[in-house]
Length: 224
Picture 1 (cartoon, one colour):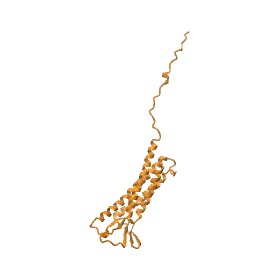
Picture 2: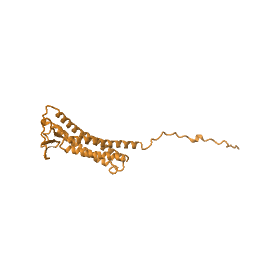
Picture 3: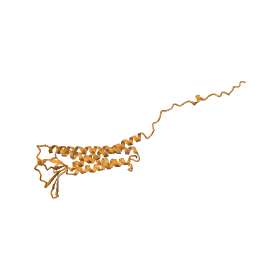
Picture 4: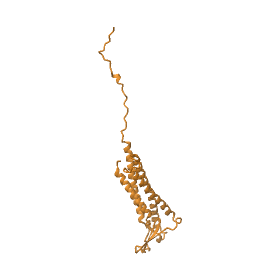
C-alpha cells in the first residue's frame, strides 16, 4: 500500500493526542489560584480540576481531595467531564480502527480499499476527538479570563489558566494533524484505485472486408 509513512505518522500523532487527552482529563491544573492585588500569600497554591482540587503548600506538600457530590457540581464542570470522557473513548476507538487498517494487520485480508476506509474512519474520529477536547478547554479558559477581568469577582476567587488547558490545546492540535494525515491518505488511495485502470476508448466500427474483395479479372466462362 502506498504512502505507508503517512499512515505511521497519522497513527503516531493520534496516539500522542490520545495520551494528551487522557492526561488533560486527569490532571487537576485546569484552574490555578491567581496572586493579584493584595492576594500575595504564596504559602499555598490551589489547583482545581475536573475530578479533584489540590492544595500545594510551600514545602512541596500536596493534598488532593475528590469532589464529594456529583450533583452539586456546576453545569460547566459536568459538561466538561462528559465531553472529555467521550473524547478519551473516541480516541481509543479511532486508534484501534487505525491499527486494523494498517498494511501488516490482516484483519481485512489483503483488501486495500477496506484498509483505506478504516484509516479514513480513524482519521475522522481523531478529528472529532480534537473537537470534543477543544470545546471544554476553550470554554473553561473563556470563563477564567472573563472572571479574572471582572471587577465584581473577589480577588480571592480569581483564577488563572492552568497547565492542563495548554496541554488540551496541544492535544487537540495533534489530533487534528493526525486525523488530517489519515484522511488525506484515504483520499489519495481512492484516487489511485480510480485511475489504476485506463479508461476504455471508443469502439471502432468493424469494417466488412468482403466489400474490398474483387472478383478476379482473368476468369473466363466457357459455354458449351
